[in-house]
Image 1 (cartoon, rainbow, N blue to C red):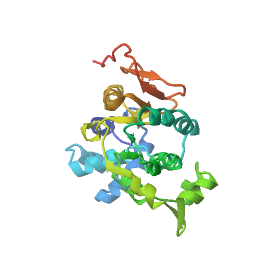
Image 2: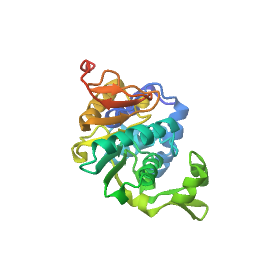
Image 3: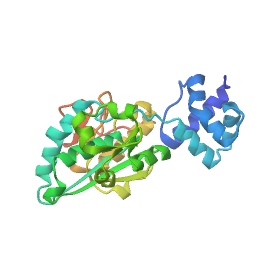
Image 4: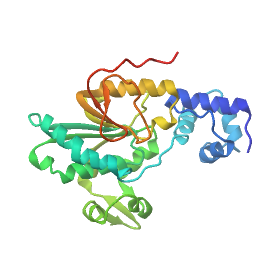
Length: 278
């Protein structure tokens, strides 16, 4: 199905303003694949009719379209080097620095369907911090309501389980649920889950020791990326860590210094200030 340039421009504008996602080069086939289920749910005869209605930006429709255009690709322990670095370097450093308070606050800022925060929950469980009297705040948020529902449910298909989990962790943390697998209740209850847009305000989170925001900025427009990076930096503790995707960079974001692994940053000495695009 073809779309007019005006329809594609409208879609791009709505999604950019609401989620910071750049769709300038989106192909008609991609748009159709993403939005056909939304068109059917709202009773439109096709995606073109949906886009015509989007011109008035009715809230429920615009929110559904924006959610549909997000990317929710994820897996357990995706990019294993990142999780190894967290377990072997970042977490020990934080444990040493927080030894007196015995509290850690970690946020998965674009958690998709939950594999990333649950991977972190497994690592934290293996360190037995709760048994040692630590308080762990592990936040998991995503723009997509359906993704957030998946996190809360904690049930994964055989295919999802096979992507990244060792047999030992599968045995330790999952039980059969029909043809699917259900995560251990103690891990599900450990997550504080809510729907959240990265373009909104972060005040409710407080100060964080580590933020995982991986493979998100690949889809953002330049201005939204800069704004979100500065908000993430401000949400970190003075010695906090920001973990991006391996192919992502914080650029010249103030007070973020590259760590030993690509995409990993620690808040440190000031660098040259970030310049906002005009």
